[in-house]
Image (tube, rainbow, N blue to C red):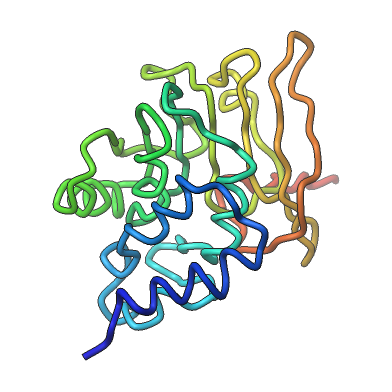
Length: 216
């Protein structure tokens, strides 16, 4: 029988810590959250590998070390509310539940109910998964201290940025051709100021692809 507990500890000790992830609350969450419960059953044995895993309908669960570095960089505080976009089956939300006050996730109709069911069944009660278009966010529940996008983007529209509080942080992996760069933005009075954090790569989200303009 596969030893998920041992695999989870090995992931933290051999993959996460060597990636300079030192936030103790985050490390504890990584040790306690069962990633296998937020993946299709046929991928359960790969739960604690370093690979990005495909879930369904274009969604993935990004590599745990990339996810951990992104969450550490966001430095989510216990009194903050988070908007999570493209959460898949909810693994990243489960991690953030112990870091944040409340998490609102947006997923499409094929995944939203599945994510909410899995989160509730595993005891995560400070997360709301809403069915909708991820590029529209969840304005009614906002504004948010933190916006986290689980997947690569080519751009982020103004409607999402509008839902971020002044001084709030937003993080995503920006992709140009085959290269990815994790960037964090801080919302100011004049817009969002972006900084590069580290190189990373993952699947590009259809909802955040640039529209191709045809010239005649």
